[in-house]
Length: 89
Image (cartoon, rainbow, N blue to C red; front, side, top):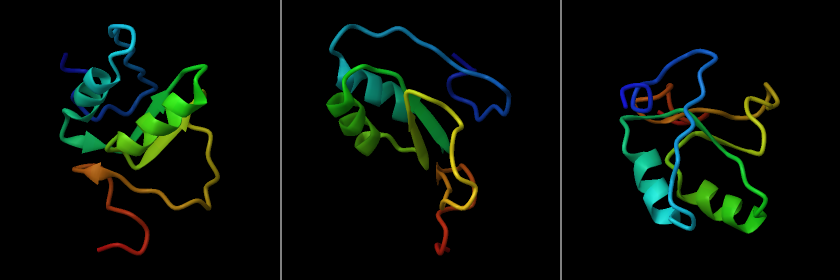
């Protein structure tokens, strides 16, 4: 879908189905974009959330919430998103 591959500034949330237990498929789909500013994971399994958050190509990964952060925290994106990490190029 176009919306799942663009860097939309919204509020916009793309929710897509996946087969139960297909974590590698979810990661492939999530990372198959030119952008990577932020992402969100909603799950009851904290171990799964932490594993997925390490594998996502996104500057910020929210777990069981979205867009809740401290403005003083470092931020940036991956790929074509943002200007890179703080103290980066």
